[in-house]
Image (cartoon, rainbow, N blue to C red; front, side, top):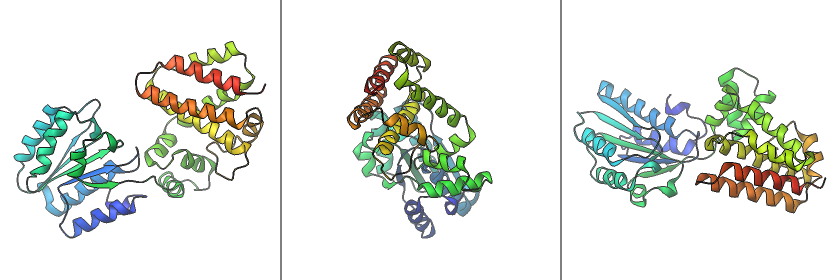
Amino acid sequence: MTLAEIVGQPVPVAILKRALATNTLGHAYLFSGEEGVGKETVARAVAEELARQTGTRSTLHVLGGDGSIKIEEIRSLRQTAALAAAGTTVWLLLDAERLTPEAGNALLKTLEEPAPGVHFFLTTTKVQSMLPTIVSRCQHLQFRRIPEEQIRLWLADRTGQDPEEERIRTIARLAQGSLGKALAYWEGSLLEERAGIIDLLKRVPWASYPAVLGFSQLWTENREKIGRELDVILEWHRDLLTVKNGIDLPLYNPGYEQDLQQISALYTNEALFRIIDTILEMKRALAGNGRIRFWLGYLLLMMKRGALT
């Protein structure tokens, strides 16, 4: 993919295109922003452009994977960068917040004394978790959420569907500014999983307390999956607030207006705000070492108690 094909990131793309055109590309860039907004794609597009400019003398190395980036990996990177042949070498460090302090300090030395023709692109969703000295040695480009309209048109073009088609519009809304999320919704079973969660949420106000507690057993103890499902629960309750108060905002769950109207009448605004605060607290707890079953049971019981049934 070329920089000209990048969707929804005009500022970073313009800066990088100008740098490439004037041969002033920096030696280190930090791309920050949420998942799926194009950080890695843009870095790879720059690497491809450098390859076109320098021919076969351009190489790309990617440091990705799970877990921490350890000092041994950075030492290997430094050695490879120092021995790079004439031409250009691009290093792409994905999720650079994974750098251990030791690895970060080792990388800092390389960024302070860059070898000619070597460029570093670091991506992160958590810039606040990175060493300030690393951030200060890079040109920091922030990637914004992509507008819903652009996601809708991009998805329609990619799939050959009508941009007004209901599934396209729903996915563009749910993607929340991320092309990656939009594609995952289109290609996977996330929409169906979402519908299953909503069907369960619709039952909570009228179910018995034992049944509600039983609902918590239906979730797997997968933290990443639970995190996505909590987003669905959060969006459902925000929709309940929107409908209850007649707020003119797009719904996260279009097509459920009748259910939302009926269920929102069972809750006070205060109850809905308490539930939303609990969901946000649960997300923070699960990002640490919170117990999934305990939190799910607590949240579902709060949803049950809040309903005036």
